[in-house]
Length: 163
Figure (cartoon, rainbow, N blue to C red):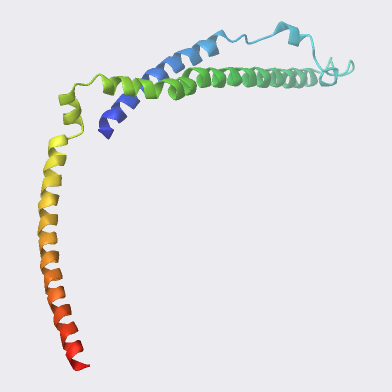
């Protein structure tokens, strides 16, 4: 039974994972990379001073720093968007729909299929064998109890005559 439920679970999870992958890729491709409103808002401290603007190394260093900052902002925004998309398209549906999905598949099974799934005949055979074994043990304990009662009665009589 657990392997069947595990199979149902895998089917649901893999379907949701594929849908989430497609949505995450869509989010990745559709996220606006540059917000032109942010490009005009440059920290003046990161720009080279007017004396150093003629120096190619200083200018390259400033452009690299600004590009790195812009890349970090884009990476952070993109990562947040993808994580939110994964949460909404993968984790929430698993929490909401998995139980209903498995319950629906199990409830659609016929009685014969359920008996085969739960291995009813095998379980009955095991229980019958265990019942027979316990009957033998119970019979042995009944014999021991009879012997104990006889010994206790004999002991009680010998004690009452000895007083």
